[in-house]
Image (tube, rainbow, N blue to C red; front, top):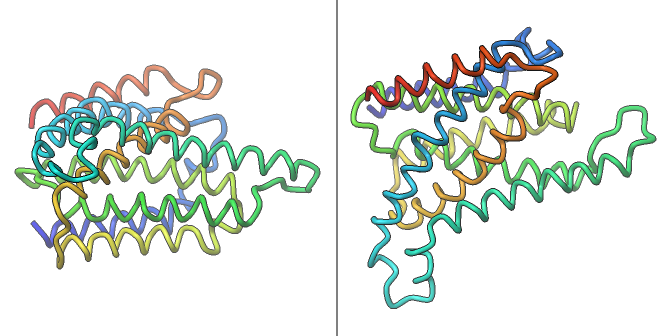
Length: 243
């Protein structure tokens, strides 16, 4: 299914490069579509990512024995928590930086914070690109569901990053995030990283996804549709459970 994963990788790239042109991204309050996106992402986190961590927990048993990293095999969820904390710390630094520049005509985070923020999401996207080709999906439908969940996740990530960093994101950020997808895919297609490293990276990614779901995709009361959110959550949950 390498050819299919490459098509989906190009799809992710297109989302980063052209999501700004989507009319729904300019709609405030949050459109029904983005409420559906929130439901899909929450379902993906709780029905796929978190159960997958328990599998990684078992896979790591014995892998790191007699090494200084032995604690990881019993604490894969600690890695996920670290991922969540890292992305929370980044978001907090962005907020603090914007407050310092609140008197500017268009307040935005300092350029150093921008590059740190983009670097973290570049790693984030690289892991997703790698998993796109290396994850054990079982069939093309599994890969398609992964693409759907991460695709809508990228749409709202782009929305948040563009709102935070404005023209800096369009000039540099989106191109780096798009390139990271292809680099991650290329590593997955032509090289092989040790399984325990992928387990740790995936756990870190899970924590980041959870934080970003809560930050960007879980609809806020004043700009959401509860019905649309539930439709997205229930529909995607049924698809996952049927696989």
